[in-house]
Figure (tube, each protein chain N blue to C red):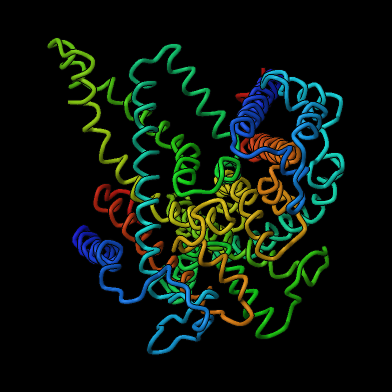
Length: 314
Length: 272
């Protein structure tokens, strides 16, 4: 990727960030429910209106919408994302508490997906229309049609409650507590990704050069590893990128099922508590992460596809 | 698979789809129990001849609630898919047909929406606006229209350069009749196929939002919400979670198969 293209991409990223945060900020502004009352009214206490107004003023929530947004932006440039109403600590600190759990969970689930899906998809393509292929296709179809949270609940019930293999109460980041949520995410992603790996490999295998190589007596294994796989890499990386978007949202639902202390569950609670500074922090984190990963994927094309490299040079 | 088999499979799946729609439409009239009538004496009963799928925490019959839930889930899904495909396609046609700065502005906006994971935005929109059936539909439509805008735009641009459109323009057809007489009918089939293939995932996303508490609200009989309530009694009454999940699986699987079959008969080159 040339420097000019990279700068263009970064420019687009900043515009998108501004757009998405503005949209979310606007949403919280027009939303029903008053965050100030949520903060002050713990239980059934009745708070005098003066106190509500004073707190509103202290939080800057009595200012016009655009001023509030600009204040948030200026704070952000200084590395300050404000205070979380519900956690009573800086947003950045609250997010640091949740980040390790989510990162660990998503990376583990992604690795599980790659380890299972890529070999299985290749096997299915090579053994096309055999017993193995049919069985794997049936299960992947089943997996695609199940919502992730239901898969999670089933896992929780059978492996947690019935068989007692794993602890069912979450709340801490430990290896044995992570098995079920990671497996849940992985199952849902494996079901989708394996079919796509199969389709990509099938398409590549049916090309003329494979038939030619076979005719010249080169063993299928060698063709597969030396020619088919490197060629199929590019579309697979593109597909992989589309999973990141799903994963970032899907992890929130799975974290809720297993009471996993991650950023997704934090965001869901932030919405329920009308803790908007925390929600803004989460949206910003997702947007940056998503765009950086997509940028990395695009950059990786230049290494995987020499044709692009040549064209990109000035 | 030949063309003939494709048609046969499409008929089979259409039959199941019609069955599901009939259950949603007239099923509630055939149910003897009331899905909202709580009776603590019947709380958390295991499946039996009286209560096929058992009862939930408030003693409501799970089978009846799943039948009523079909109506809620299907109507929410159809509303979402119709709104987002119509709005998205319209935006796509406008930007493809007008070109120039209109196209640039609309497509930049589409790109911006696509540069953020949709499901996260849907959770934020539905959650912040407050959980309700209408807000869920709205949130998913706000997130989902972009795909149709891209599709509508690329198809319109392709059509604009075709000869029959040029002939129509030469004959003095005005822009508006040109759009609804020539462009829309030609785009329509592909949009319908795309929308049909979206139904399954929309059912799941609606259930997901309700599961988080940002969709249908209690005491509505909605599958995602029932799973959320089932989660709380997982230990004592697993049936409250198993049967709504099976209902989602059955309906989503059917619509996925139906959508694929529809695509196959509309476009034989794409069948695997």
